Structure formats: C-alpha cells, structure tokens
Length: 66
Image (cartoon, rainbow, N blue to C red; front, side, top):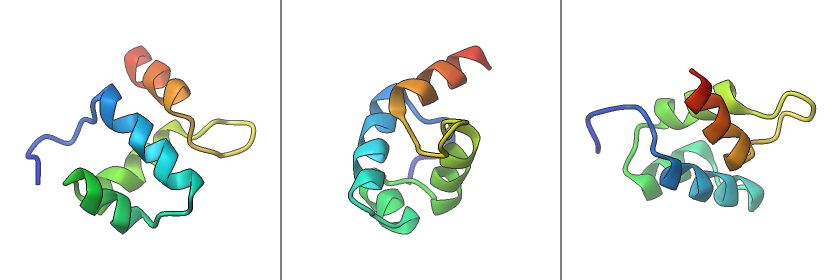
C-alpha cells in the first residue's frame, strides 16, 4: 500500500468507474493499493452535493480548491 493518503487525479477516475459498477470500497481499495479508509474519505469529501454521487472531475476540482 502507498504510504501517503492523498490521491492523484489519475486515481480518481478509476474510483468513479468502479463506483458506477457497484464495486465495494474495499474492492476499490484493493485495486488501487490503498486503504479502505482513504477511499471512503475521498468519496465522502468529494461526492457531488446535489445527488451524492462520486464524479471524478468534481473530485479533482474540490481537491485542487483545498
């Protein structure tokens, strides 16, 4: 697993794709070599406010803004 927790923009797009096909948080974490808590936090912090879905472009913009 990677030591740092901040996700790259390149990691956000696979998260979005895997969420659309209903991968679990643990399955996404395994695929990316990340902690499930990192994936959970990413989705929680960057979900689209109107519908709660995880959209990678929105997540990238939110992360850049922080």
